[in-house]
Length: 326
Ligand SMILES: NC(=O)c1ccc[n+]([C@@H]2O[C@H](COP(=O)([O-])OP(=O)(O)OC[C@H]3O[C@@H](n4cnc5c(N)ncnc54)[C@H](O)[C@@H]3O)[C@@H](O)[C@H]2O)c1
Ligand SMILES: O=C(O)C[C@H](O)C(=O)O
Image (cartoon, rainbow, N blue to C red; front, side):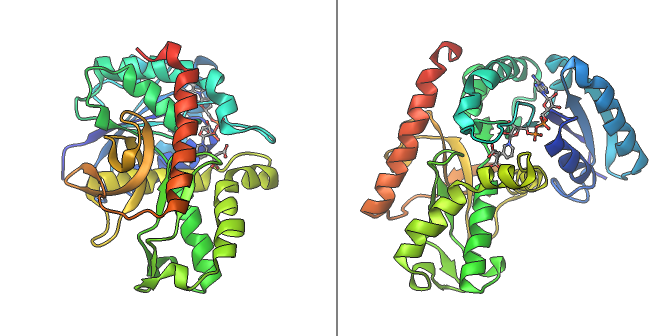
């Protein structure tokens, strides 16, 4: 048996975590041979509810669950963690854009960035789920100057998975037949789901769909899917968000599928002309616990315009929280 790794989850009594924690503890994220210690962070008023979640985790008798820490103190919850899933934040309600949450949630991520800087493992892998995810990840990263900026990522895997399903439905194929999909940019309504590189059963996806459907149906559907879920469910996506978080971390830790890539919002090194330092979603491959931005994707004028628009939104979000960026 391997030695246990420490996995922090914030917002651990919230709705996403209720789908997430049990899957981490059952080995779906890091493998069926990897014991985990869950280090759960909540705000003080939610500690009682958190206790109930921890009791249920115990009641599953997961063979891989080697311990549970519950705290309202980030320096306790993040102590020596190898993985940190930053979920805890206010979700948006009907009619809100994710960036409307910037003020409410930004302070959380500066405090948590500092705590990670102080006590987490130096190789901690951080995934920000709480919205606006990219800019929250930027805030956490900038408040953790002793950690490699590449340790901080934000989640666009839910958008990626949504796009896979939409395309599979349209083309009458299986998600298993689809490769080389990219979500570029922000986890927001400016994101750009790019089908130009996509292969369906080895052939070009754009040969199977009309440009009109791509522009007027597919792109807005993927961009607006979070809002559509909120409208239908009366609450933001939870199980699908947890599933995407598992996919993101599993690929980062254990590697992406051979011959394909995934979408991850990562620290921009200037690839594709995107401003260095933004947390921007790119096509990424992962191996040996490290992600790499796929190079050499040829973007046409349509794509470049969409990539620039979502970059511009991230620049504006960054500028709006400049006071929280040391
Ligand atoms: N990136 C994505 O694709 C994606 C998808 C779905 C939801 N989200 C976002 O995830 C976040 C959580 O969603 P949810 O549905 O689980 O919300 P929720 O309200 O059910 O749960 C959030 C939990 O976070 C806790 N919390 C608040 N401040 C905290 C802090 N400082 N430290 C620790 N915990 C704290 C709350 O007490 C609550 O239990 C929201 O911001 C939502 O918009 C992101
Ligand atoms: O849309 C939201 O506010 C929640 C989440 O980011 C989603 O995409 O479902």
